[in-house]
Image 1 (cartoon, rainbow, N blue to C red):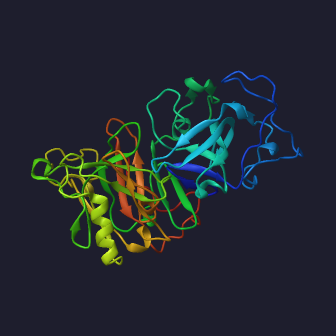
Image 2 (image 1 turned 30 degrees about the horizontal axis):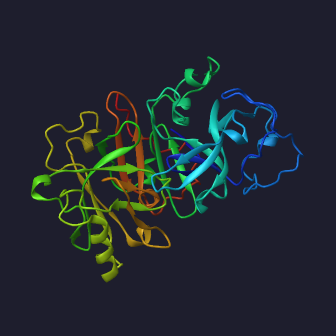
Image 3 (image 1 turned 45 degrees about the vertical axis):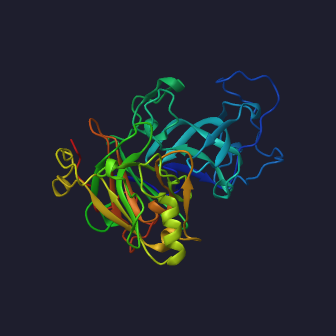
Length: 368
């Protein structure tokens, strides 16, 4: 198992925190065509909100900018925050891996969380051929949609798994499994839903004895899609009864209860307890047959200033944002044929970011 310690991680996204890429010249640029007019070392940079602390592209001889300032891409997250980015390509070093990859350099951000960051290397999953997922680049020698070919002897990530957790100051990305020292107890595994992102089923959320997902009789026993998105600063709840799906508005129910007492924990039931006919056959022996498990988030994780809970507009989904990743280590297991998510409480004694590259404690056994 390998671990990346030098990058802060957010949104199942690796963030190069500290600066931004400068603009290119005004010469004609064709979409997708490498632009070699990126400023040289020593050039003056103006009108940029970042400081190029962790990644200064001027110091890289292999950096290539693929889009000019007139060809910004707008990246929007589940909490409606967005970035304006340019597409770049360079050799990326991550532990023992050294791969040619594309990534985004941030030119503008409306969110303060991104204002100290240079860019993003996305760990988000997508089946699209031109998916911006760095995870795909780490696990294959060829990215046809990007016209990227790694050397035949290049090291790739053999086991298609990564884990992520965070605290108030930093995050940790673990590649190829997870470090058993980082968690308390055993890992709970649940199927991954929504193959364009990391989704799980949540069947209950309660606060101080108040059920927030109070389904009507017609929908009783149902579950709701919850998206794991550490790029969202808050937990986000449905803000409507959605035509009789719920007896009460989940977000308003939470707000009323929290106004009365803000010292309670949020309790989430992950998985469908009523549907244990087909337990995950690929789960390790100790987790096999367990269809649901309750997880508790203490107030220091969801309550301001450490966290927040917001209403999610327009859609009947839950967003498990940054507060969730500060409570639990989340394993993303994309080993075929069954994709799944693993969840376990973070060990409070674990020194995040200080473990060796090759920990003595092995990750959990392979599914194969």
